[in-house]
Length: 115
Image 1 (cartoon, rainbow, N blue to C red):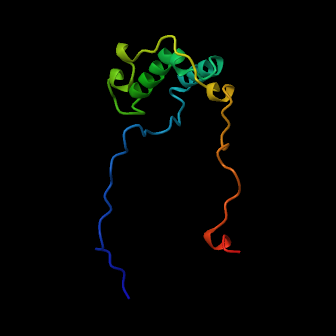
Image 2 (cartoon, helix red, strand yellow):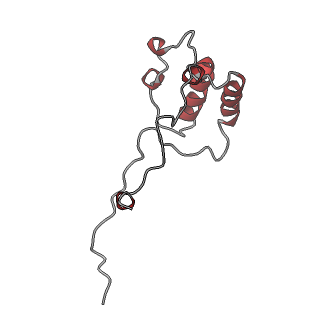
Image 3 (tube, rainbow, N blue to C red):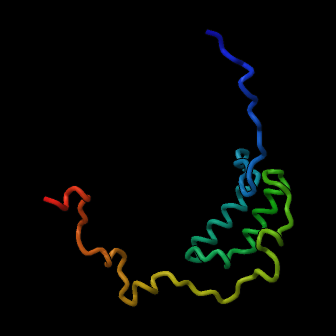
């Protein structure tokens, strides 16, 4: 039995938007570290690190590590700017919400109910 080499061609697709190569040479590493350290200092409130994020993405575009795109389309326009945002982390828990509270007892499979 022979191998059928004409079974079909593999079609190469460009990467989806938002997928880009890793920075193996560390060309934008300092900007990335500045952004991550800002996130750590600000308790992961990314809107406080907006300008560092912008600089990191601009570096990636300049070094051709991602497709060039208008930063306004990536959420950096004046209209998308966030001011005085507050986190809702833990609000429900402080009001007495408990995940899984609605589960009363262990359920049985349908065949176990007849025993």
